[in-house]
Image (cartoon, rainbow, N blue to C red):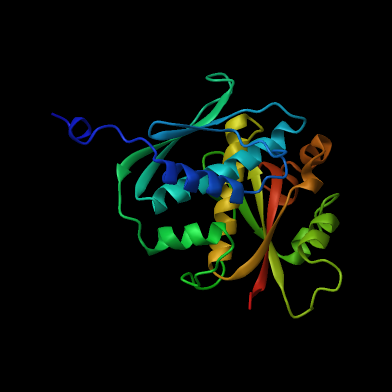
Length: 249
């Protein structure tokens, strides 16, 4: 007899469901217009498509939401298993996250859960370090950029810099940014871009630094196309995560 037959299939309790929904509401919501495409069923959660004007932005936001669900499942003592649906496989479902196996949450899991609500644990030392052109997910890359490199980007550089470091920012409070690019604009690549961006944000927040996600300068398709492969940038730029290097007090 299998362990699953002995233990019975896991079903989310009312309290677990409340925690999952709260984690979803902590994710950036600007593109979702208040609609949360979650369907909690059995031992998993489905993320489903909700039609709207900005499908690119919604898919990036869904990737961010996915990270919050994965982190909350780990905090609840489960190892999540995430399956992305490709465009032609299931036109409505974006992803399914399943509570695969039991695992006691460790300090890192709990610190990540706290970071979702803006709490810093200071368990991580210094800023997140990523290698140049690191590829943390299939078809998605991250390129660390200095303020000078950001400002030199045509069409978007000034807007990104103003959003991350608004006028009046203390000169002694340096900042930098991670540019996130995708191999294509297929649905799964955009979702993965959102996942990568949100993981960086949680690491930054956990370490006690301030950060901001910048997407608006990349909204026009012509802008994204014009930046493809420019100045050594790998892929299609989708968004940037800005980091202030001074720790929050």
